[in-house]
Length: 359
Image 1 (cartoon, rainbow, N blue to C red):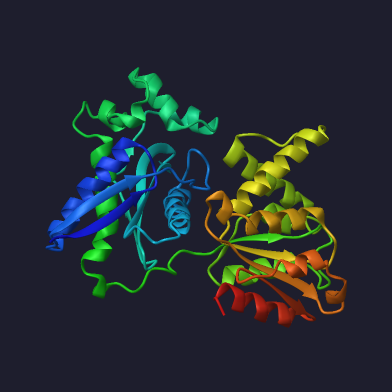
Image 2 (image 1 turned 135 degrees about the horizontal axis):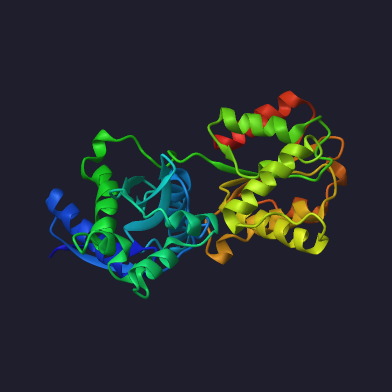
């Protein structure tokens, strides 16, 4: 009797499902396995912009889909999880498109693969600048509705010599190469750089410039702070405003309003909520009461209930303030949320390094 290999594709797009099946059939042949494939599909969030731009954001979207799917599979039914994300990359100011695939097994070992890259017509740049998806441009230029579920824009541009199934199959098989001769690859469960959200009130901690100190530690640990506009608040408002404008343009194609407090507040909430959902780690400064910090901790804690990956949370509080800490916060501690007291900058460095390294 042949064994069964169960695969979950983190999208309902038929081209991604068919491309994944083709890739796994090649994988079975490459590994001389006689197995029955069960491939199921369900849409999971990518936690990046609707239209990713750049290699990093596209790769991250494929990884996030896989992490969210694996986290939702409480009974560990599936053997492999497949995330596919299509993104735009600019080469010499000209838009190109490619897909990233991430394949993870039930032991958290994962690898990435990419499709071939191909150029887009220059007109596509206007759609990207407006925050629109390439699918909108593709439907307009090809005069084909729901083109992403059909051959895709690559089929139109290549006169049907290539299609999205081949694109997705190539990307997925590229990732599967890591599983063909696994003894040649180091475990990849920690290859991805941690994404850190630093949650703080404007007055931050007792140690001067604490958010910036933490950001430096994150960089030394090969991590990435995804909310620089927050860490500069109260320290360098020019940088704060610059980063905030860059992020709102990137994710929502909006320039922050200067004279409308309600609209500005709505944009702040929408952006920070998205960045908390994107983060793999959250570091919260608890020295000063803050509704915002409390909301961000709660949002991070409840991510699994919303179908998102777990987030590790570190609360930092000066030892002189520990007794004043909200019992609500202290009582929320769990395996994914720890609170540590500090006194000096050196204490913070030691605690944050240990947190990011899983110690």
